[in-house]
Length: 193
Image (cartoon, rainbow, N blue to C red; front, side, top):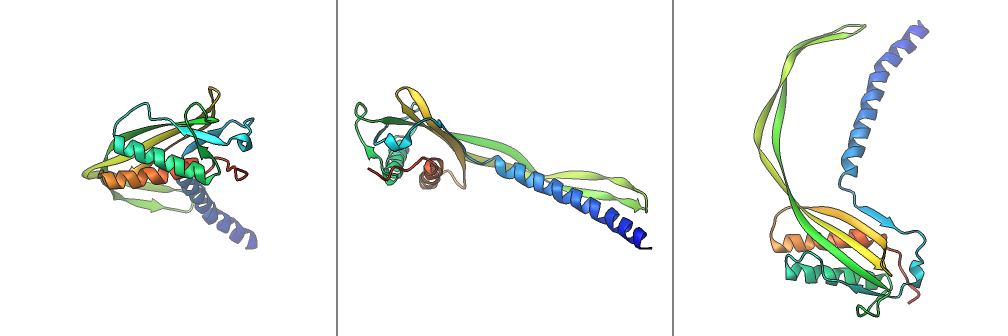
């Protein structure tokens, strides 16, 4: 009797474990897609860096937003102990490449209809699933790539995106500020300056 109860308990808990593992993996994959990508050259002595210069973007699209991003990058790097300098006097040059992207996707609701018979050793399910479209969904993203170069070599690279709630300039500016701060957060601080 005890053996049968343990076996019965194992049969009912195994599907639950499989479902939990599946949900965990799905959650992990979903979270990883919006995570910024950041790389640093490990052999760089970041403590020796004292000055920086923020270059204008290669793809000029909005001078006001470009100036705001350059100012935000300057503020973040100054907060990490670096000093702004002219292009020829700087230890590192910081470049940024902003872009925007619109992703279109339809939204739908799935409705399952059918009957099922589940027995002790297996199950049978008869029916179908209908997908009913409920409207089109358009999502706007602001992408940003920041590159830090020393003596012609990349020493820090960060890329990420922010989902925009609306496309007005204030919302875009706030999203870019948060994105710059997120992308430069791992940049090593130099508090000795």
